[in-house]
Length: 286
Ligand SMILES: [Zn+2]
Figure 1 (cartoon, protein in one colour):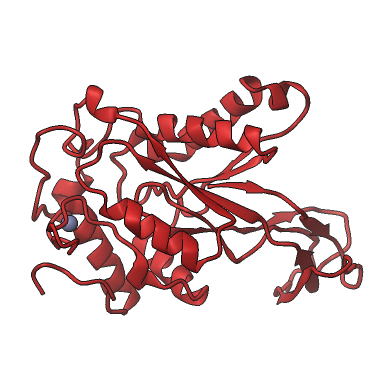
Figure 2 (spheres, rainbow, N blue to C red):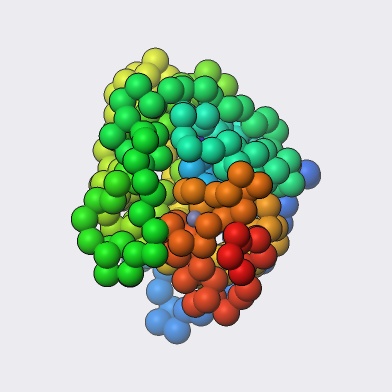
């Protein structure tokens, strides 16, 4: 989840792209610019960047394009950056099953994470969630039911706790960039998946660390936060992520097959349907 930023580049103008020394990676992006306006393109990387600690699915970096008046226009730009090194972080937090951690390991390996650490924390001491307590995971809910209110699968303050660990790892390895796969679209019910929360945590990170006080700028990236599930799947396909390695189900069978009926399965299946792609994982009831 934490990444060590090696290089990022901001380019301006039609012909001002500069190539850094090898072994950097070069890409050519072309942008329509009918109004002949001016843009700044900040390129980070469009490769896989990290794992969602909850689902083990991949997150992706982003390309930000800001409009800047009164400067050179960009019709095309060569954006160059060295990739981040991924330090993946997953949590064995007392959830109902270990399968998502195994999936996270598979994904981290397949995508070449520099390290994958698993933090063992026991959130069962708090309970209060169908994922960490002896409560049934809701099944076969309609889209309206899923969208209504905060579900019983909400784990108290989970993303605050996960991000705190990620912040500790980032500070320890001198990274300033933390990526999390939070998504606010389908699950409007999770308060710690909202952009406001991510922003607030970023403020906290910069106030509450030695690195922050000494001038480092932490960034919490949530590149999937406004994507629909089908857009996430489309992005994964575009970036050649092997989705058969991933896991989303809250309540898999002992053999690790997804139930196909919990909210997480239903949203995943809906996303694949909308993307027009068959989900490559196996379900208990095909
Ligand atoms: Zn399920």
